[in-house]
Image (cartoon, rainbow over all chains, first blue to last red; front, side):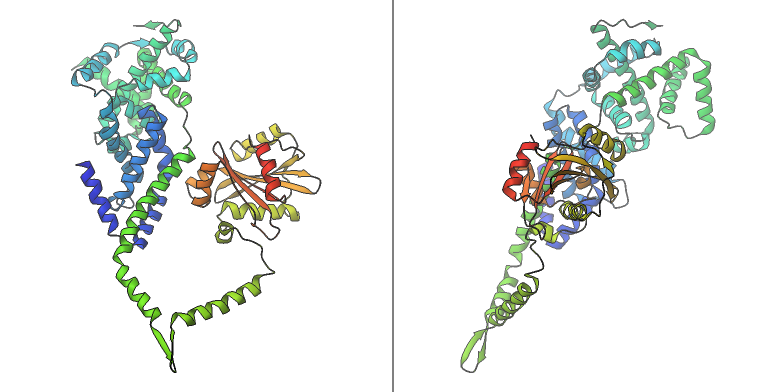
Length: 207
Length: 301
């Protein structure tokens, strides 16, 4: 179905005059290209691999160019591009990895419920856990989050998108964004504590 | 529901507060009072804030590799080119009509002369006049410099080089110490400039200015009366279209690692362009191309 859609759009491109194509390219360069760095960073964090991120970014931009006539000028181009990237990611890249099954999602939920009320001394967290972790440890912990949580954490904490923009991008209510963010950070915090424990750094918690 | 729900909602309110997503001043005050009045909630707030800040500090933004940007740009151009080929086929009949029109003969007495002959004669006259008028005024041959606008990195490099030669650009920061020049540029232009060591040349300093909101750094090296000048700016300037570098030049830099040309001004100076990490560099020199090649390969290792 996806290949048929792309073929249909390519055929419409053939019907445009050279002047119309150049006008589309100029408009595309003004509206869409400035967001390329932001989307590249998102692609790197979702795929965890530079080559895959390059491919994902290329797929996204080619698709965006083909369907650029469907983008409503004056609306949020960044959010539109992110949605295209999300769909490309789901269609191509997530299918190549193990799909999160219903059982896995329940496991994550149960895990969150088990740690929800855990209290950690923030001074301890800062001086004993976070200060001893390498950047790679932090990246690994983020990559190990389930996609739904990882996406909101990346978009909010790294890409500085608002809850509204994230909700629009994911097509979920703002409350869901907030809830996933809270849980995602909590799970991440626990993973970082576990990394620190593995490295032999004492982590104290108070209950 | 009940107490667990209240604790659950407080936690998420704290999340919203951390992310500055509570616009209601009354609710913000309520959350602030909760955090300051309850040790457990205070710990949760500080722990979550630490986690958020840790991500921001430790996971750096990656620069968009120029090869990636170039690859995407080329793919879109190819898509357009393939579409244009289709459009060209559809206009063939118009082209055929045009060919017929210009080859149809006009009769001078008994002698038929094709109409395009008159266009050729006019063209020869115009070309001769153009050559005569311009033969002493310009030696610029490089097509990218000839066609470039003021936004062009190549045109800017030529103009800045001439200003330095004419004494119109004076050094803002004088130093022969590469580390000091790097620091000056980093502190004032906010990017990591490339300050090479060039055999037989002494670094004299740099000039900073701005175009279209983009910081530009100009380095000057001298050896007797000879100068090597290097113009630098961030790759982002091209990606965001604030400055221009022709696609053909970019393609050559990506494949051959540099682009070198002469015929960029009336003195036949040599220009070399290359990328260094995320900086675009354009050097100008009065040296002939072959000599500049030797110097360039020496300093850009």
